[in-house]
Image 1 (cartoon, one colour):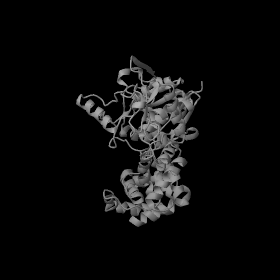
Image 2 (spheres, rainbow, N blue to C red):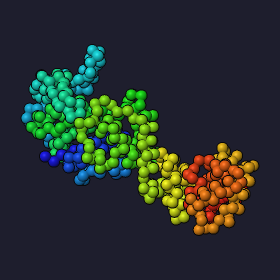
Image 3 (tube, rainbow, N blue to C red):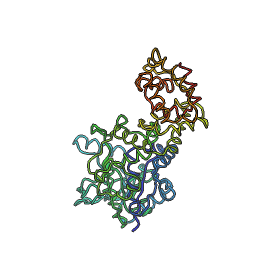
Image 4 (cartoon, helix red, strand yellow):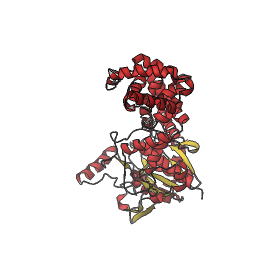
Length: 465
């Protein structure tokens, strides 16, 4: 058996962070077992589905590094097939026409509300002769759900799950306008796509029983089910925008690296011993459903941000520069020239040590591209004694030959001058830092001087001194 899973989002908005985790779990499960992950766009809700949302799903998955196999399937393109199955269930006696009026259905709901029961259809057309049908009502087709006993399903995450069949009413599988409903379409598509494992959020647990019965009625092989607990906020409440219930694109804009977000989502509800930093290769080798927890995972922005900082520090400098350039150019309103790119690339080792997001990294590297205005708390370091130090250092640095303009030699030279003038090195370095960057916090000032080169360094010192 070839393991085949599917990620099946509805294109009614952005790619939600919870949906992204579901896609990741599906993809890792498929890769771990040498199988494939298919992408199905569940777009039968024509009023709410948009092409922009479809594109957001594609772009979100591509950015996260979660590739799918084969051409994506659009559920709406298979509606005739879904209708065909509804009619087959009808001919087998596993479904029936229901002629209830809107008023009758509302009366059923009202009665349920009064009794404090879930609203449900009472089955009044289940065994009724269609000859009694009113002429002015277009019928729906309802599936004949089992009424006695219970349904027991082994879920690969939740374990054994059971429900008394009397709790399941007869769901509509074909609306009065002839369009199929979600639970029918999903079953038909899962069968036709040869899906072996359905891995999704546990908000679909009730749907599992309805879909299970349709599979049985058609005599089709039932896939294995795995329902993953949803993601909650750090306070244990349902995930909302204040917790991080945002689209994947928002995380990109906030400066998170895709590999960091992927690693974080993997660890939300799944574990492999004490491992926290997990490469893609390790994730594929280790992932299975046995270690998916049964309790909701809690989203923690601080943990994600710290993890992102680790990935930034470990990232290849060329890769970081490529990731930074769109943010930088958007902020500057112009392209970064070759000299600026060279400064950034050579200064990246120092820049990336403190940054936890690409946005922070963008802000911290602007000084390499142009002199920056002095921060309010930095001005005092280039006044009075600081200004005298800058004037002194300008003369000494001007005399230093180009061949000695390296980070280590610049630091050694500054130490010698500091000892000679009986000034602490830090007291000398801070005015230099402020003059070169406009701030009091930066990579090593000697690294900055080396990257900028002699002419640019002196040019900036003269602006202040």
